[in-house]
Image (tube, rainbow over all chains, first blue to last red):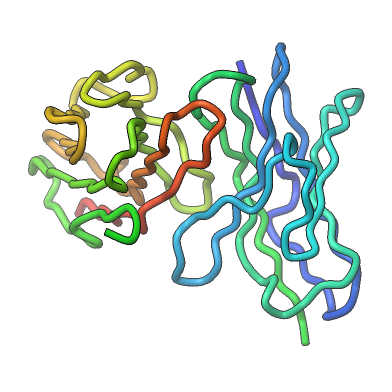
Length: 110
Length: 114
């Protein structure tokens, strides 16, 4: 069975401080990992995916297969980063039956 | 339309009542997904359609839940004899093909069973 764990329900950081949202997963095969974001009163949207190896809005995430982690990082938090962040997994090559974590609320304090 | 549209946005149902939730996917999107998101939880997969075919319904919690997409476009999620534990936000998402393509989410329908 596939599972995604986000240990922090709430993460509060000051503006300009580094951010790291933790995500660990369990899956027997080779998964694809994603981060989704939901800003206040907006719909859930894709932030980034590990296969793209891209940086979106200053966020990056590296897949560590040894530690089965996919932590989301940003060097300098901005107020507009405040949102709910969900780590998610889907089997590689399969359709997007996405398994989500429980989410972490990021609060950036001005 | 500009994105995935769900209606109604809010629904209050008395316990035992049947409800129908509608999803209008992005035009041309082959794949459609339904998720259930309980308070404080992440979205949980319910079912998946490829065009009009329901290829996976493993996430439907009971036989009171039924989903259809008869013409491969609009989808309806029906819940019969609603129970309090059905209270959640129901999210619909569509993607162009379903494989390695981004899924776009609707704003959800918040169902409250009283």
